[in-house]
Length: 405
Ligand SMILES: NC(=O)c1ccc[n+]([C@@H]2O[C@H](COP(=O)([O-])OP(=O)(O)OC[C@H]3O[C@@H](n4cnc5c(N)ncnc54)[C@H](O)[C@@H]3O)[C@@H](O)[C@H]2O)c1
Image 1: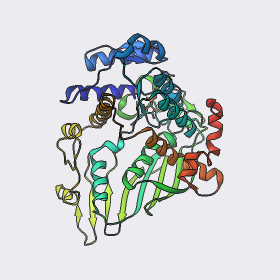
Image 2: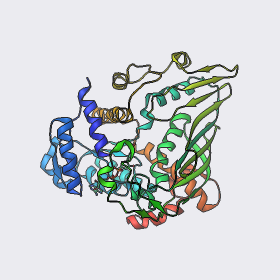
Image 3: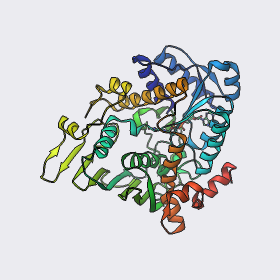
Image 4: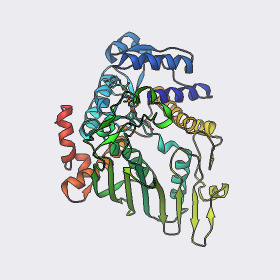
């Protein structure tokens, strides 16, 4: 993901609103650090200095280093975030904020002590199509929202991107991918009150297909993954939600689906429904009215008078009221990452809070773990129970491993 972030920085640097500079990379694996630093020189024109230790990096730069962006695997997020905050740095952390709710809490404590900003890099909601969808719902295009269906099924028995995404103690794919959709559910319809669900390990053995992963960025590493692994972490979650506004959510994130890969995002209201194309593809939303009309062109904007992209998003995606765009996946991906970096730079400069704050990231993770906790307890759980730790049975073992029990 660090490689993808470099491309986001390149887009930001080339924009009229450039406000950050990459001066250092830090990775325990020095091969990876030098590889990324070399790539940064090609993409950004300046080779960042290479480190393996955050405290040393922060000391050498002093006040010239203001923020750190964490793109490591999830189990390390909280220790790295705390080290950065204690070194006086603002932090942007890839999703999920941390591996467990308790790990989020220790980051929150460190952020309070340090008085620094923590931003969670949740990119899906920044897609202009998701911005438009939210505006349509908020502006009443479908009437009162009643039901949201969020379904992703596919993946079979392949190793999903990296082996660590299949192990309970390093962040299962149902959490790693699921948290994006938890964020989208909350972004579209607001807070969730109660959750009933299950999480499963559907595939007992997974195989290395040598895939270069999303965007083709993992090829350098995937050849060295084992031929097969035995997952200890869940690859699928199934849940029914009740939103605070009374709407129902039906959510499946099944990364072990065979046969027809299936993706559905639809929101049904008291007057109409919204068919959503998913994330980072630029395809248009479709508004379905009761008289059989399907609106899937610029006319959809009439139903979202409040829709306006922020200036950088408008610059990168072709206008402040775009309703579709046509870009390659990696190009879309890096433009969204540019938006995250620009916001981080603005927060550092002005002291403003980011859109996806530490608390938002914590709530996204709570919603993701809610089906796990509900399944273990054999009953519905409230989001508050997961947030407070009252429903945390599933995570207890992970916390013990992390030394947070
Ligand atoms: N937003 C998205 O679309 C998206 C997509 C992919 C990954 N991600 C997120 O990005 C993060 C990284 O995922 P990835 O697939 O790139 O992981 P990865 O395993 O490919 O890379 C992790 C890197 O972190 C380094 N690292 C591990 N522990 C470290 C430590 N303590 N200090 C310094 N470096 C350390 C590793 O050496 C490795 O280079 C995860 O949080 C993941 O969820 C987000």
